[in-house]
Image (cartoon, rainbow, N blue to C red; front, side):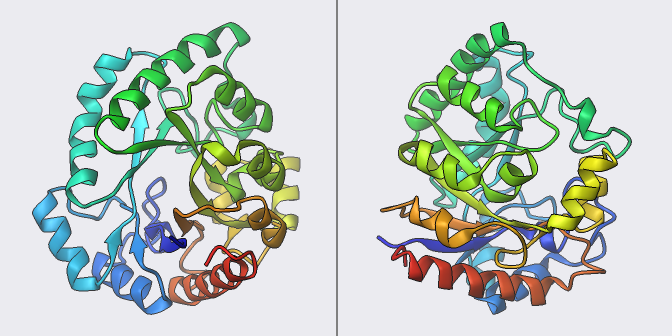
Length: 294
């Protein structure tokens, strides 16, 4: 089975800063995603959350559901309580045929708060990783019984941001917990996505492909911007338009057969969504073909 190519609607309408693309209709996003060459799309805040309605919208656009983000609070509630909150989202994914659950801890995250610089993001003490990992593993094992893989999304402004955080997280969790490797967040967080791909290949279940503009990243770090300020100023872009070494990255994913998803949040007033989505899709397909993934 070869890889499939998906996109996240965040290039059209931002979930964390809803002024970005707020007036863009969902229909425009879906039409342009298909036009750009994608097979599927992830959920965003404008999508229906009832299975029949969601299926109808996606079928009309000719797109499959890739997956959808879930915000967890495992630092403040146990696995059984988390599952009570998660079940509706999980059921929706299953009803649409998705076998990947995108999962991120956000109980104390700062990525959605434009007033907080990234230096203020939460960090876990060494002693706290074990319990967090145990809870995460319990949730992942429960989800796996439903035929869905939990793919954890490391993310700027959260407790799993840096390369050291990713290592601590992976060491504290069991094999049921898979990794969503995001090339853009890894780069922004100071980690090497190529090295991460090599180290965690057997546990990578989902890949988000975004690129990083080197000059904007340098300014964001120097001025200690918030995550959203960095987004607005253009830190992220689509694959092939920044500093990420995608040919080297994909060489470290031999045999990968999941989704490759362009998730490149930009201000749609500055970066035309269709133009960049098309560019990202074309570049991604070329990289995947060269690496014999497609």
